[in-house]
Amino acid sequence: MKKRIIATLLAACTAISLTACAGAVPTAPAADSAAPAADTAAEAESSAPEGAQELSFWTFQAAHQTFMEDAAKRWNETYPDRPIDFKAETLGYDDLHNNLMISLQTGTGAPDIADIEISMYANFITGDEESIPLVPLNDIIEPDKENLIMGRFDNYANHGNYYGVDYHVGATCLMYNKEIFEEAGVDINSIETWDDFKEAGKVIREKTGKYIMACETT
View 1 (cartoon, one colour):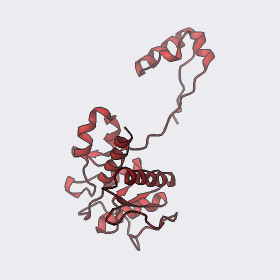
View 2 (cartoon, one colour; view 1 turned 135 degrees about the horizontal axis):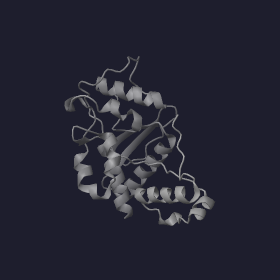
View 3 (spheres, helix red, strand yellow; view 1 turned 135 degrees about the vertical axis):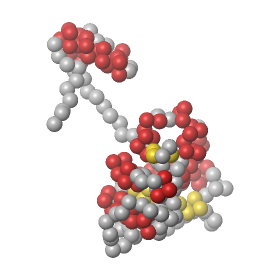
View 4 (cartoon, helix red, strand yellow; view 1 turned 180 degrees about the horizontal axis):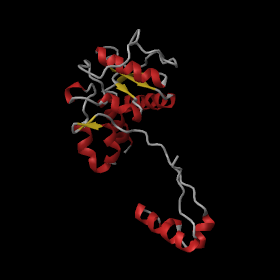
């Protein structure tokens, strides 16, 4: 299982490679240089074996850099016959997305892998299929569809292709008032689906006059 996790992680990450030539991409603001200015130093001397495949990575989260560097280290330990020389850089949020777009437009300087924040992804996958500078990942994603939450991949899809792999899902916690649930006779452990949640809300409203949840609308 451990080998499977490491192999899947690095295979997925390798596949999010960016094309060497950008072609026609939506115009981004001009800049003096497409070269990234890293906010954190990531020029540590490489310890990869001779002949290792170089793999570059840009991210805007230092924690992601640490995570990926550790994954690359474990990959090399597990697959010494297929070593990689992993070079990661952490840039500012705006710097990463601006430099990445410029690098793709000019066809030079882009990394093999990049963290593209989900709200920015549409900027990189709009236009004709031929103009999208990211590599389709269908051959990696489709064979494993049964084990994936495919709704998460809609954010990275266009023209029937998937252009990204979701490898970070932030945890969400919903707090509840135990006294209100007990007053209504609703067992929190009985709520497993959204339909269960809806029905519990009806019971709570009927028994207590209160709503199961309040949402900000402004």
